[in-house]
Figure 1 (cartoon, rainbow, N blue to C red):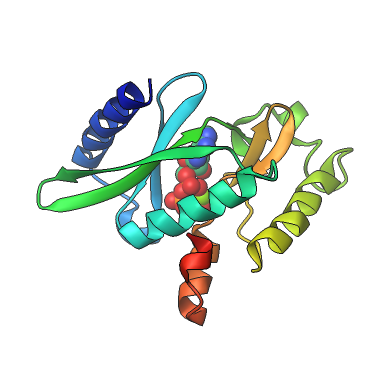
Figure 2 (figure 1 turned 45 degrees about the horizontal axis):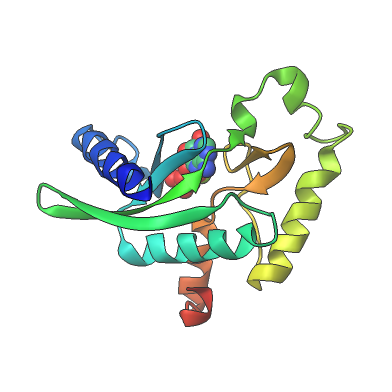
Length: 167
Ligand SMILES: Nc1ncnc2c1ncn2[C@@H]1O[C@H](COP(=O)(O)OP(=O)(O)OP(=O)(O)O)[C@@H](O)[C@H]1O
Ligand SMILES: [Mg+2]
């Protein structure tokens, strides 16, 4: 099963990489595609970026704060290599219906959930947790989870504290 998913991830990755990466130079880090109802894949342009994102996601997933991640892979497209992993599919907040979404925004009956998850994630990761716009968190089995750690990994690089402890 994992091999089959890995194969599908690589094929999807190559297909995506062949499309113009319009945002590539605009600071967006990852590309994502859903593969099955449960699993999707995301990939990055740099191995370190993938490794740090993967490490953070695995750490947080152990505490139920992120989707599970597994099965790192890489593939070549043209003269470049891209680096990815499999991730559980999340209902991303920005894609939810407004009636549901508004419950998680300021003043909604569930608006505290995101800040609680961010607080817990801060403790687990030992760094600030930010850039949580509605494309960077969502619902998994009815619980708020975080899906994008690139801004945090960038900060760790700037601070020079990207170490094996995050791997
Ligand atoms: N596990 C997931 N489940 C469902 N959709 C996802 C998942 N991970 C990523 N996505 C989708 O792919 C988009 C891009 O992924 P992600 O936020 O990790 O990349 P990014 O390039 O770092 O984003 P940003 O634009 O915030 O810098 C997300 O906004 C979301 O729509
Ligand atoms: Mg994002």
